[in-house]
Figure 1 (cartoon, rainbow, N blue to C red):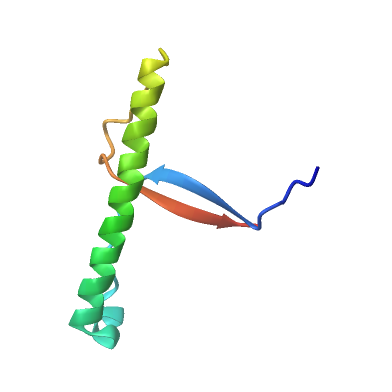
Figure 2: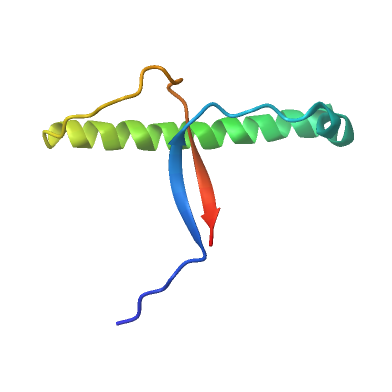
Length: 82
């Protein structure tokens, strides 16, 4: 049996996404920035739906969830490289 070891690990964190730096916005232009923002929002919605589905599944199994209410209810997926 072969087990592949990936060079990255995907992790979901509870964090609001930051804005694009003004200097980068000037370099890329308004159309590309609008497209990037739509793309990032769609990625965040996908991760949010995954988190809510996993929460609902955990509740149905009887797992007690502890949610940090001091942070925004916003999630993003990050890649951790080895």
